[in-house]
Image (cartoon, rainbow, N blue to C red; front, side, top):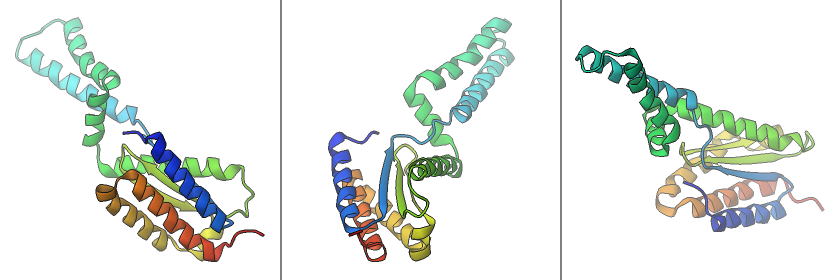
Length: 191
């Protein structure tokens, strides 16, 4: 799943509108996938290939080592080269592991965004990972001192609830608007 250009434009317009109402920097990142988790999907391919080779050897269908190695490598090749097989393996991974990797990527993006800004700048990052169905809001110290994570978590909960019925664009625009409503009183625009 990727975000269409019209959706990107709508979210960008919402961010621009919010940044006119507040001195805080609002950044929205919509990633098609946070982490491909190659090492984990590779492990699935290795386990399936090994199991298949073991069954064929045990049932005395194939005895030759090179043939058994070939059988073992086929699932590895499928996991690496066929997107739907890779996606299936991702769905089999524990949700906490997938979300951990997505959270790590959100923090990496936050560090990248804030690196170019002064340390005193109030920053809020809305990170959305489509493949992992993961949403995270990260805020700078200045923002966290005035707006707690509990409040940001409510924005995330509202976003995830509306995603099912409203879709990505409308949910993201509403989330950005909610972020602006929270930020504007605490961080009025610079004059």
